[in-house]
Length: 492
Image 1 (cartoon, helix red, strand yellow):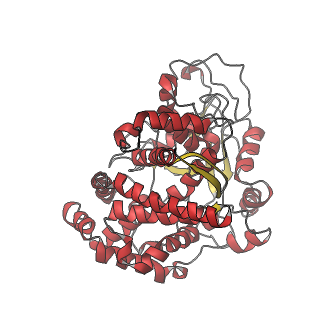
Image 2 (cartoon, rainbow, N blue to C red):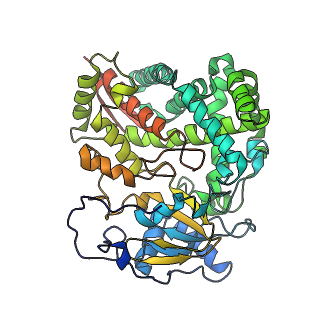
Image 3 (tube, helix red, strand yellow):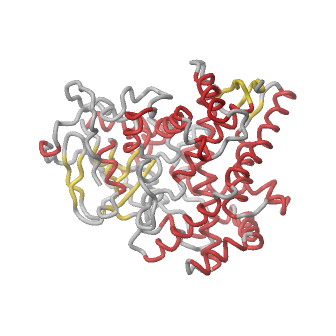
């Protein structure tokens, strides 16, 4: 799938080779075929050098930027961690795609294979999922993929009946905790209370289980998911919380065993097995999954996709709003209260009428995509287009898109390095949604059993919009920064 040319493109400046100002030729037919730049370097030495740049000397964003500038291209070959010494079965060679046009190829299922590429060529042990190869690791050509994806979409469909009620109920608890902490300490750290809120809300909505039936799970289930998620992704993630070279030696050198979380993960499995009967029957009777496959896929959707995604995305969203001093809060408050009145009218329909609220959500997804890297493997040889050239990709090559740079493509987004709350407002803003990739596909795409787009794509944006609307029905203003809320003024 190639991106269409924007119908109402503004006049552009002459072409440049920089990542954020490179301009497309007037028509695709004028694109030259170019030898793909970049190098994997010498065996072992090249991947190790790139690994040190990625994690230590440059960091992910600078790693990709400097190579794009060096090669004067947003498409090039390089290496990405994990690499030598204890990842002998992982091939670090990738084709980087850093503009919207080339990035879009990662979601054309005729061109690419999504088998076992969630985290590139590295896949955590299946023991993290009870030995089951869950749906996220299946390609669309594998028969079980359609069953598992359809199961996930049906769960979401059924959850819509309680989604709003459970969300607002758990937000009541969350904001009550925050207010108490502010009163007591003058500020409140919101990350852990928010994660607890998300976990309880998702268990009730997706699995149909009230966590209060198990005090142990209510208290520790979200903590288990934090550990479970971290152990899978740490070998591929720059943390910056441990000084170098300690982070490099101890966190990025080997894969972590599932044994470190196995006992607590088993408690989550038992919790689902004992309490999520309706969901489990659905997976078994309507979609032909075994009970274990149903449990593991339900936990992956709940724990990795939903809980993990919201745990990254919602703090970014809250930070943008609480730290704003441009008058955005007043504008959001005005829109929310105009549409909802006293608050009793807040629902999926009314939140869809809030253009500014939705635009803030979309802009946050553009600016800080919750999943920074997307991968796909070429099914066969094919030609991939950037804005200014065409390159040949070989069968089996792994494509990698770094979304924080892709979503700052100046050929698509004006002033891409600026957070613009109104970016997606109005007709022109709506057209930009064709180019907003954060969910394994464009915002205007439709998840189906035949693609890999996030089944909950629309529920994520609606939920985030509801969180904002709920906030400004409760409070006239809120002040905070990354990780903490310092003051709230209750709605008059």
